Length: 93
Ligand code: FES
Image (cartoon, rainbow, N blue to C red):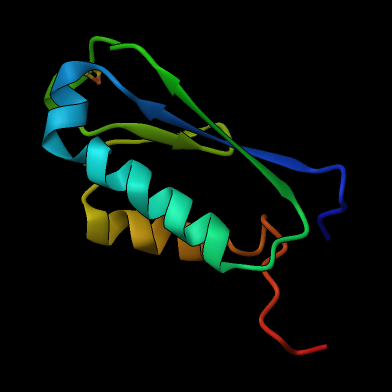
């Protein structure tokens, strides 16, 4: 169970290739997700520069795990899967 001290880090590649290929939109989806949920863990969203993996982009990392070719649809799946790590409140209290 996540505690209030847990921090889940989401790192978005902000290099020009990843950004143009989808991470600009992905960043907006991440912010929308965080704002629309009741989370018990803290989420830290940061950016990074190009990691020379542009061909596999758009790339981003959630909780230390890198994901390649992250479409907006795939990102929504990843965020839903991460819901447990983020202590997502499903209103079952
Ligand atoms: S722009 Fe993201 S890896 Fe190069």
